[in-house]
Amino acid sequence: MPEPEVLTDMDVAGTDRYVLRKLPEVTLAFWGMKIAATTLGETAGDLFAQTLKLGYFLTTIALFLIFVVTLVVQLRSRRYNPFFYWTVILSTSMAGTTMSDFMNRDASAKFLTDGAKSLGWGPQGLGLGYPTGAAILISLLLAIFVIWKCTGLTFAIRDIVSFRAEFLFWAAILVSNTLGTSMGDFLSDSSGLGYAGGALLVTGLLAVLVALMRVPAVPNVVLFWIAFVLTRPLGATAGDFLTKPLAKGGLDLGTAGSSAVLLAVLIGLMGYAHVQERRTAASQDKTLTGVS
Image (cartoon, rainbow, N blue to C red):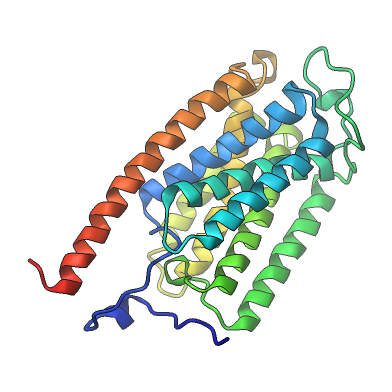
């Protein structure tokens, strides 16, 4: 079966057809939801693995299965649905948190919550360390992009409408969120910057990316993917700042309380995005039908 025709906004102009987009427009609200979802992914992942003491192994398996279920729902959807899309982003953030912890840590007492002597059943970490874990994840992410490039499919999020391109997109999202977790934990735990310092560093790098958007020689698609990776360590450091004890430089809100607040924020932003999407769709319908 041939690949479905991929149309962009330029293709739509002057026709009576338009593509039902599967992915959102990249706006300021998009980045707000991305940071909220990744921060929630950090706190929720830690909630299951550490606070509830299920351990990195069992939690990674459970959250990866949740990711698969949410991904199937998103892939089967015929048009962009904010709830489906951001549920997958959240599931990749949660799975990425525990996948990163399982790769890099060894579940020693340093990483356990107060009073915990051990975590759940199964091996509790490969102990690869942040540099080795990051190198593996960077290699995987580059491999995905090479395969993506070889297919000839677009990297631009607004033009992704085929199944193959969307599948590659989500594979890149899962790996980038896992990589971002490793980067965030390294900045918070091992770099000496602490939670606030790590967050300020990532924020500064994101500001540089915003400035580079005005440089014609730098493709916006490249900036998008770099920003997508960097917002994950920002969420990871923010999540640690909310949940970790005061003695370690955190606010000591706990994983459960922080997750509940962040979930409420994310749901609110998703509702706002849904309303905006309906308004945009209605405007497009009027334009295509010639109704003023």
